[in-house]
Length: 529
Image 1 (tube, helix red, strand yellow):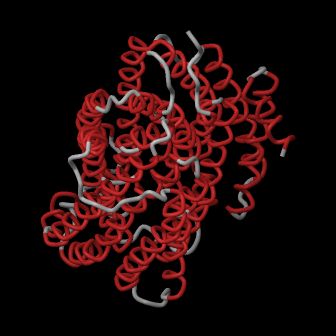
Image 2 (cartoon, rainbow, N blue to C red):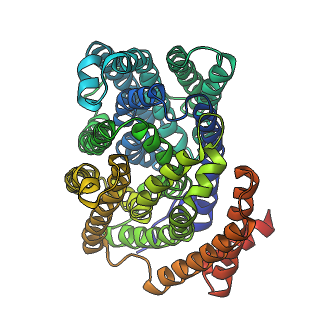
Image 3 (tube, helix red, strand yellow):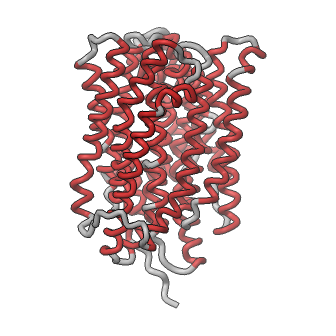
């Protein structure tokens, strides 16, 4: 029997290049996002207006995430990429057009419903907000909702671009959204905080339109057979919708967890919601750069694999093991940096204007809690992509429900009663929220790996590799901490960059000495460029 033909994009070197493109796009987007958050922190600090904007942003963001990148990647890309691999461009165009049309109509209806239901949504997500703070949050949400609908269409563009292996544009498109918000803050900075928060919401809507607009021309050029319709009866469209349902519910369940976090944080006093948002901005940087980049590049490659069940299983095992090593090489030092140097990192990025040194220490505590589950969440993303490549969207849903139930129960205990039990201020309960979410993330990851290994064979990281990575990160953390002590009080930007650079250099040197293969691979790639 002849060996099954794999698409060129499924070769490891090609996928590594694609992951690099995704990572580069995400890095650029996240760096601009960090600039946006720094400018926001400069003008708002951890004030009531900051709390209102950050809480408001979660509500339309719920819609964006339900219909956004993760859901469409799981339901649309496996079907669309398979059609492209089989050379059926006509059917691929019909599927893409129908999915885009149905998504646009559904998003428009939900945007309208959300704008009408905003007061009740505020009561659900931020019951601790009252008076002027609650009214401001309602105004911001109603402005933001149309932008969320546009970002859902931007995710549809991303699905098409990724299937055609055009990764860089799709992941740099959010740069224009961030720039629109930064421009709004700078140009209107003299407005009172409440007015500036509403203006910033309008800037976000304008940025959402720009993000969709910069991707659309390339989408129309690649999907030449695109046919706009509401035809939900075609078999391939029905498969996308069938896959969409469980992933939609899964994302909804995860978003409920985010709502619970925001709800509990709103009960913990001024600055808790804004502090949680700042910590999540930092936490999501390695998740996006290293977890999302590898998972996004691997999904179309895994979904395009041709051959029998044994060949596909072997292909998935190779993909998973390679991707897991790439992710762990970068995520382990990220988690250690959050634990040991989170205050330094926060000060470098946010400590300016109304954002003080005490604010940096507060966000560090929240960030340290997030480090507990950082590795689990990023590795779990890749395992979920393997399920989606197998057209199985229901198994990740079941495990996501387990995680959210654990997160909600543990989060309440760690955020609300625990600070009182141990005699600390209630505001520090936010760190308990993020740590409990990390514990739940490890449970979900274990379930995902164990179930998939029963289906395709053994996958995972070697214990010796994990030990070497943590040893290298711990050693680098100790050296960087020593540099921090020796330097003493300095300007947070200069001081922080020196400490962080020391940490990075010593981690790479230690990984090289411990013969971590990914370190040598990284060095070869840099030399080639």
